[in-house]
Image 1 (cartoon, each protein chain N blue to C red):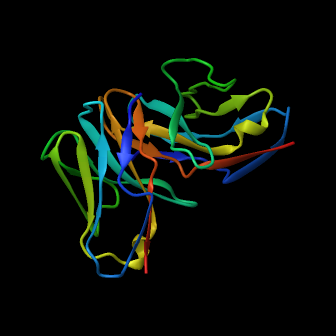
Image 2: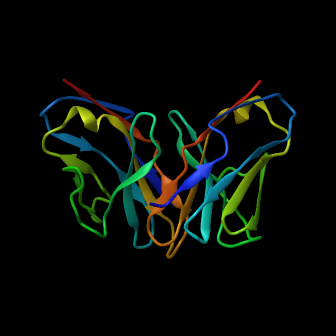
Image 3: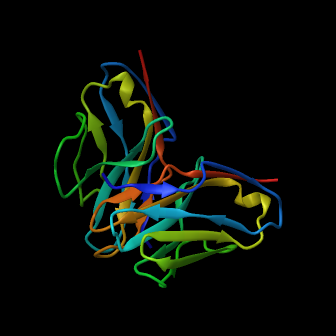
Length: 110
Length: 110
């Protein structure tokens, strides 16, 4: 069965410190992985996907198939990064539903 | 911009009532989804649909049903609301990799 694990419910860091939000997955096939973010009072939105290999708002994530991980990283946290972050896995191919982790709340302290 | 609109932000219903949550998308997406979002549990898939009049059960379909009579509209129905269905409900649509979410409906069953 597909599963996404985010081990930290809450992560607090100081402004300017590096951030790493952990995500591990279990899936027998070739996964598609995503990070979604929900800022306060806003809707859930896509932050980045592993196939695009891009940096969004300073965040990057690399798929490590050996460790089955897709950790989200940012070298210098900003207060506006405070939000709820969800790692998600697409089950199967094509337009199949996303499987979400339980989420990590990031709090950036000034 | 893709728009996914949920008809209500907040709803309060009584135990045993039949409840309808409505979702409309304006981008002609074939795929639509209903999730519930609970603290510490993340997003869990209730039902999804790939086409009009088509539906598939997700991970937690018990106590829910859905209707998709038109491509743009996907309704979630609570046949007989119970207090354990108090939650935030998120609708999403997708075509391809990215899912677009509505603003959510916070349902309280008293």
